[in-house]
Amino acid sequence: MDLNATPVYDQSVNTTGCCPKFNPDGWDEQSLHFRDKTFVRAHTISAMHVPLNMGRVFARVQKHIDDHEALDPGQALVLSRDLSPWTGEHLFAVKKDVPEEEVVSLSGDFLSKVFEGPYSKTKEWYDKMQDLIRAQGQEPGTVWFFYTTCPKCAQAYGKNYVVGLVQVKQAELG
Image: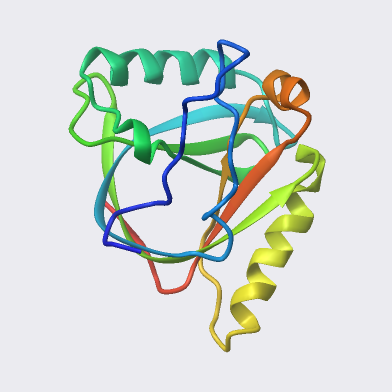
């Protein structure tokens, strides 16, 4: 995969008016290489890993990204991870700065894996991501998840795809 590129996220099928239907083709076991890839960083509040204000935070960030035409539609990506049982961190890929939001860069090499199932399997998927890297003789770094649809859209489409990304080499967030 080219530097700072992800597989194409085809957003043309959107029967819910909310999240596009995710097509997992091309996303499984891809090597992704980020060098100073630009993201907007946001945090959510959680209760034992269950997000409480995700809708409000995502709507605010998406509005600011849209206002500045900072989204590259074919490269839409939101990486999420739990920093603790009480806080989630989310990185929204953008093609330029968004002044109202915190902009960071991410560098590193990652391997992707597509999962399908309920969000309650995230801990199991986290472990599988680490095992995937260890099976290649490397130590895993940070694990991120790309939740491709919200719960309502996943139900409407009949599939809940989640893409895991595990760091192969030490990533730097700046």
